Image (cartoon, rainbow, N blue to C red; front, side, top):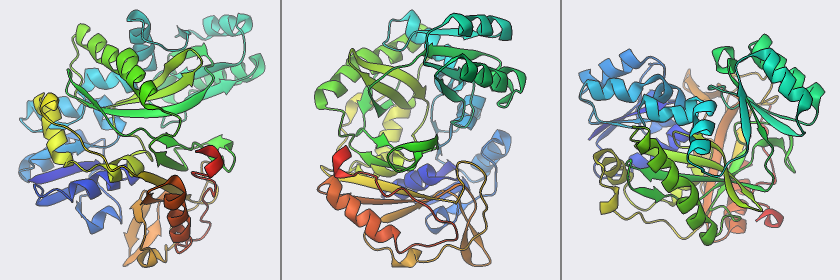
Length: 419
């Protein structure tokens, strides 16, 4: 098979890496890819949002399967466009991807079908939102309705902070049209968990659970990032809880979408809070998460191609997915200053010395024969072991061999006290 993967981050490197292990795959293209992906696939200089060009490329190169990594093309309707052209593509269509593309759509759906989530109100008028904020209880969570690259969520502890957040979204429009509707919801308390599942619109097969580390500094301090590391399985998500997630959240949401006339095919990613009352939905994503994919896919024993094909064809009930009975730990190396302002263009050295980990590239580029930094999150170093401790020791032993100017990483991923 010839496969096209869309995206250029660590998640896409993990997808390409897993696809490259399939005996069914002859050739992988990746658009736009990165320096690490380029070692396993042919990188194609097409932006993830240029659906027309991606479609033309897939037709011209007789691509047998396209796998979409990031959310933006899914929300824009890349699946619909490819399917119209008779191309096989993995991911939810535009209507289904609204589960990530519109927080209002999701909250309304969850509320309508009594699926556990926090209480909420949605506002499209500034003054009405202000009136509510003056009268509500705190803390509350405020969210821009549309895509905001993981930055559209504000946890506010009083009216002053709430007004600042509302002004940023609705007056200064820092997220553009994504902030036209603002969701204000109750704050949920407990441990966070991420659960990914494959679904063909009817059947649901959960993956190994994961936990990611969002804050930039050790001890979960500092601003939120796209993820500073992750571990799998999630030590807080017991088997009984996972069953509860399946019965009270995943199955009901796929059925709810069906009732709304939407068949959801692809990866469904539930961001959950494990509260005293049970698991509740924080958000849904319409694709693999990042950096969780970098610990989930390395534990997958079943051929990913077989799972993808069964998902597209509505035959997930015909296959069983096998996982390694091991632990995976990933630490992310970032550019100095991330998630704020940072510089790029620095050479990365020591990659060839890494022996007991796999290095997933996120923000890298090949320039004049040298691998250099090109983003905030630069590399994700993943190791597998029989225990979190063993995997953790390997990760930190190996990451020390890598160097670039301003390199920073958290040193407390998978600490024993946390797992």
